[in-house]
Image (spheres, rainbow over the protein chains, first blue to last red):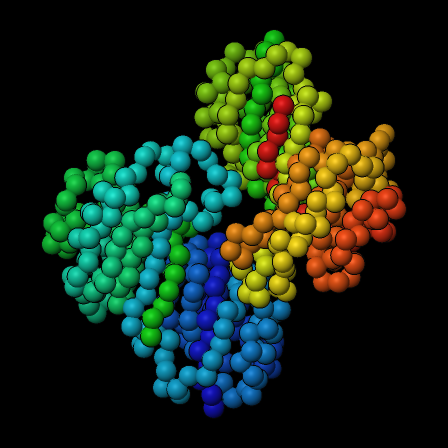
Length: 244
Length: 244
């Protein structure tokens, strides 16, 4: 029995997130179907994270415990031939048998892309939020520093979701600009449901004056979803890096 | 009666090209429908170029002869609200009544994008050709210089298409690299059917040794479609600039 660490990337537009569910096409299901076609056996794939419908991944890791003897590089090539065009296998290597893609993850980095231009961009709709009014990335980056540290992020968790602990450690949070694209980048040891999307919505609400500047500390302290801003749409969100 | 010069951009993935046709969704039809909804009148839109199914436009110009009194900036905003997400209105201005988007075009620039990486990229499938083997952009740029000048481009015209003259003047042709993206850029006073896609296919065929280096002059002289390389797929092609 081997344990393979597989790295993929996917355009999440057409998928109802990572996790297998009934009556919806998911990335996990699509990947398991492709593996079954290649290895002639049904192996379960353990993902590093659940992702919402429409969320993308530049890098996503999963582990597969399998009795298949297929070589790692052959598996990558075969997957890219069998998988649909919106999922790519990037690499595969042997992992310790105990390795678990979710539990062993040390940190993850998400990016949220905001197309900050008065002009509509027909190529970016599924891959960013379009925000027409000027964003000051230096100001927003300074605001985002308040996310850094170990906090209970109840205010940045979708109402109604239940988790054992809402405490997470954010290692880095910054806002940068590449031309008309403003990118919010956040790395943490874990994320609550909708956490990055609510962080992004809050930064935008600060930018347009709906939430006062320098209030993220207070929003965190409030431990109340209604203290934070709106939830930005899934389509601008990318799981960007996974650290083990 | 006014004559409006409208500039748009579009993701051509979902469209059967620019021109209205029966039983297929086209950009022209979609634009005319949006204009009718806004102006409550059916005006014909004259485009600068026919484009193939799946071809994109970073910039596309058209003129609209209309009795509508709508202000140009209002029209742009209204179009962006009414048009689907894959077509954007970029600008609009009054033009001379005689102005014709196709006949008055001095030159056009197309770019063809080649994703030149061993890795599949799930975000670029509809917007590039994936070519896995190394491309030498400097070598290809030197090869492409043979396209420049006034030639009869029969060899670079889809077999079976009929035009009055196959003579076109290519003002510039170059290949450049931005990271893993190799871009073929060509500007001419006009293009024959599939011309840029056959030029691109020929450059790739030269790169992989299927066509000898330094043979583009001879291919042009042959005036025979079969002397040139394959037709690269539509999805990597972008109409990039229009000059009047």
